[in-house]
Length: 61
Ligand SMILES: [Zn+2]
Image 1: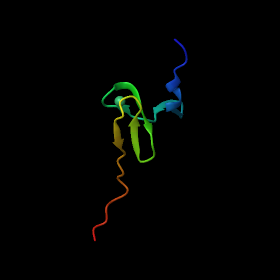
Image 2: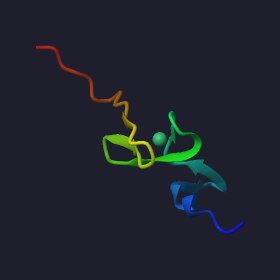
Image 3: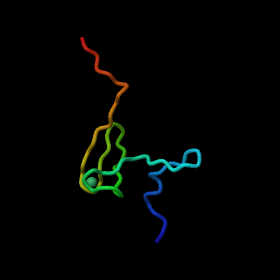
Image 4: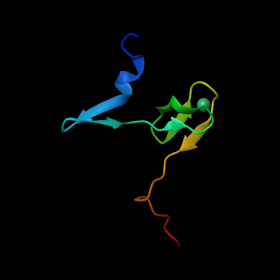
C-alpha cells in the first residue's frame, strides 16, 4: 500500500486528524466530495450537495 492521495483532504489539528470534506452519500464512505465554495460535489458520480449556511439567515421584508 502506498501513500493515500486523499491525505490532502485531511487536516491535522492539535495532533488530531480532522476530515475536511464529507463523504459522498451515493458512493459511500471512502469517496470524498470536492469543496466548491458553497457546495460539495462528488467527482465520481456527480452528486452535488449545498453547504448549510446557518449564519446567513433569510431576511423577511
Ligand atoms: Zn459520488
